[in-house]
Picture 1 (cartoon, rainbow, N blue to C red):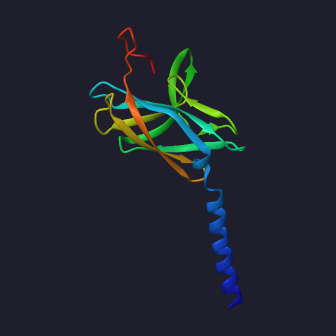
Picture 2: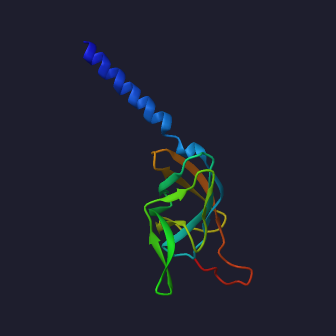
Picture 3: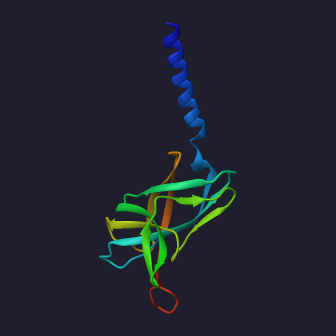
Length: 155
């Protein structure tokens, strides 16, 4: 009987401990999130934002989810023999008491296999998943990619 009670107590304590540390999402502030508008028929677009870590420990964004696309991936840009290419990455580090800037030409979140057209004026829902399993839901406006000169801005 004592062993059974002790096992239940240990199990309950481990659940409480996991929940006590599973709040990376609460330490992250999301600023100016948006999704880039794409022409009709385009299959992918990028989303951008600034993530601010208000804790004293590094936090890793490990996944993003959205019903707006079949796949959502974390990406960066790399120079490969003079050519700028996008690469999927396993995580985006948000440094302790610092920021990660997701912006065109750098870190970003790709929406691949768009479910519907993505046009300026829409709002896309996304869930950010952190290494500890905690999640943060955000709403992102879709913004036009046209520059003032009428040309599409590069990704």
